Image (cartoon, rainbow, N blue to C red):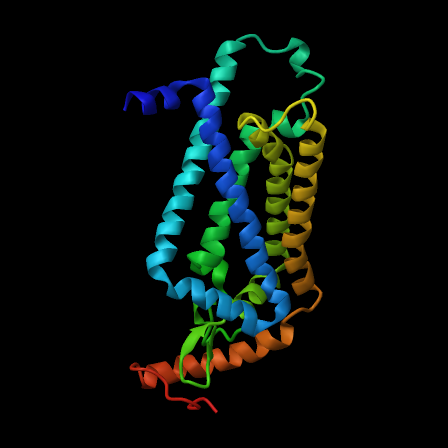
Length: 272
């Protein structure tokens, strides 16, 4: 326990904790992007992928809780390090200016990180929790409105699974939602453009020889993530998946009505 306390309370320990939690979160951001990019492979690919994740509950929830713990650890470590730095430098820089070598990204890491955390909460409320104000589907009849959770597809076997492809198209078809995502992802990638390099430095993998390469690599990763994530709402606004969404809305109404008549489940080909 003394070792844990020493790590938790030491400046070096805080940096290690923030860096290691950062590694986990960066890997998740990359993996999440790769998974979401399956939207370009068509409805079957991303719906099968999403169904695989959602159906493995015994794995899904431990991973979610682990990621949540990493986010909390990362934020707490960042706040504690920021407070330590202010305590060590109680007098502000002359005229409020930071050192010349400090970039805008490095000087706004804490504030930017907290804004990114707020964006993550918005993202979870939108696509994971699917709260009603954010998940209403525009264009559905007021007498029988649909939400993201209502978008389902019936397989030939009679199995019903969420139509994640249609959910993504429905969500990003709203220009304001897409704009919010563009801003949020932009801030995330701006945060990572410095954070990845700082992560390597905290873990001791950055020196005067490799420093330029690490800094350039961090910026390249940030740009790739930015392009990858923003390609999805951009493609949707340009028309990707509009025909599928229209068909999905029709089928989801049929499934919804059929489930009311037969709560025990649908029979194969019952929607034809």
